[in-house]
Image 1: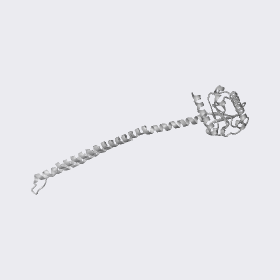
Image 2: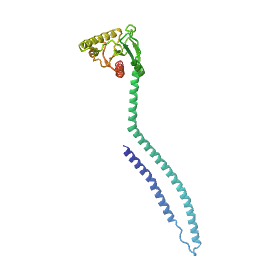
Image 3: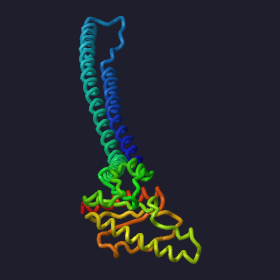
Image 4: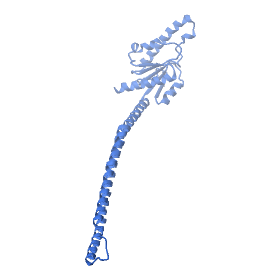
Length: 277
C-alpha cells in the first residue's frame, strides 16, 4: 500500500512538472526564431539615404518588438506562476488524500482497538465499584481480617457481619462465607488415622448446618464464595450446594487470599451479568 502511494506521488510530480518545462522550452525556441528573423543586414560605406531609413524603421521595429516581448514575458510569467501554484495545490490535495488513506488503513483500527480495551477496563472497574460484598465470618468473634482490607482496597464495598441476628436485610450480590478464620471446622489430619474418617464426616455436617443457617437468616440469591483453609482436605458438600440449597444458583470456592480475590471478582462479573440480563 505504501509503495503504491509513493509511486503515485512520483508519477504525479513527473507529469505536473514536465509540462511547464516543455512550455518554457517552446517559448525560448520562439524567441530565438524572432531574433533571427529581425537580424540587421551588414552595413557598408556606400549605404545611402534609403538604407538609413530602412535601418531606422528596423530599429524602431526592434524596440517595439522588445517592448512587446517584455510584456509577453510578463504574461508568460504570470501564467507560469498560476500554473505552478495550481500544480502545488493539486500536489497538496494528493498528499492529503494519501495521508487520509493511510490513517484509515493503519491508524484507525489501532485507535479502535485501544478504545475497546479501555472500555473493557472501565467496565470491569465499574462492576467492582458497584458491587457490594457480604462477608460473613462464621463465628461469634468480630475481628479485623487481611481479606477485608484486600477486598476494600480492590474497590469493593464490604459488609462485615458475623451475628445472624444483626442483619435482616436481603443479601448483597455476592456472599463470602469464611471458614478459615472461624475455627468451627476441625482438622482431620490433627488426629489419629482411626478417627480421621469420623472428623471428615463431622466437618461435612458442620459445613451443611452453617450454610443452612446463614441462607435462612436473610432473603436473596447471592453468588456464593466459600473460603476454606488449604491442607485440611476437600469438603464434599461444596460440590452439592446447588442441589442441597435451592437459593444457590452459582458458587465458587477459594483457599488462599489471592484465590479469594480472584473468586470474588469473578462472582461480581457473574452477578452483574445476571442483573443486566
